[in-house]
Length: 370
Image 1 (cartoon, rainbow, N blue to C red):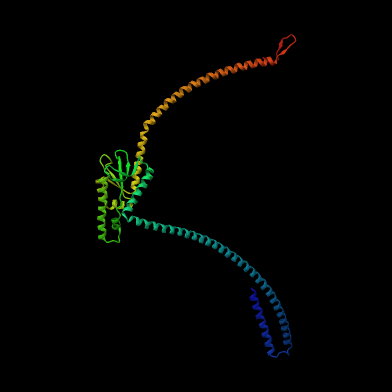
Image 2: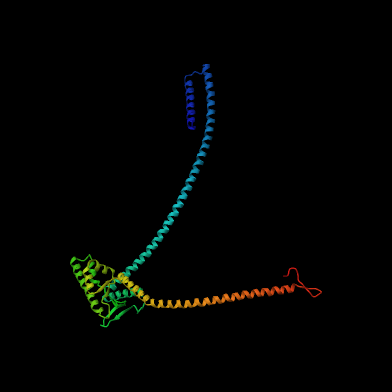
């Protein structure tokens, strides 16, 4: 039974007793002896009940205080645990948030650097755009790209393999020539950059009529470049029967090969190779390998002759070494004989030094001597 139920029962008992007392008093039965006894007993019972109730109240208050203290202690313990867990979680979340914030700052700094690079690149692109709008500067741009490729493949100023701004016997100057092995011989390379009509041709913002006219003009430009290279840089007996047209833009080269096969066939008939930076690097690398193999083959006979001479010298070395070995063996035998003689003489000297002279001048050897 709980404390609150006991309190309620006590209160009900007190109410019942008080009710009985009031009823008895209201009926005026004090004259009756039994009634007086009953009242006296009821009075004593009331006192006893009041005392018990006071004791019970005191005990109940003590128990409630103790119970409250226990509950309060448990509650404080739980609150402390909850507080510690909350603080731990807050610290962990703060640490994670701090790391995340640091990472965000690092990412933002990288983004700022990337943005600066993009800004610089946009400036460079604008500068390049300005350069490519002019024919002369565009030609210089193509020549510089061609020279860089030659330098990277063959080395800088390797006049035995290539030359730039090479003047032919007909008076024309090629951007560069390659002194390739036979049957190619001297191979001319010239840079061409047909850009204006190409831009209009691929610009989807332009009308179909404008793009069609630009396509026709682009083909005429490419054919003119092919004709110029074929007529200027292919000379019978002086150069190879072919020449190379270097297009410094991969996009233009891809456009020609993908959508204008008639230009490729036209160039083939005119004996002109169409090349881009990528294909030119591959072609020149192959030529470089061929040249290296030819140079290696030139020295094959010399290497073979020198190896034969080295074999003769090695035979002489072996013959002389054999003679030296025999001489060493002979000397070794003489040394061994000399060592035996030396040992015998030493033993004689030892025997003489250990002998005793007797009175009759006879030599008496120790028992140990031989």
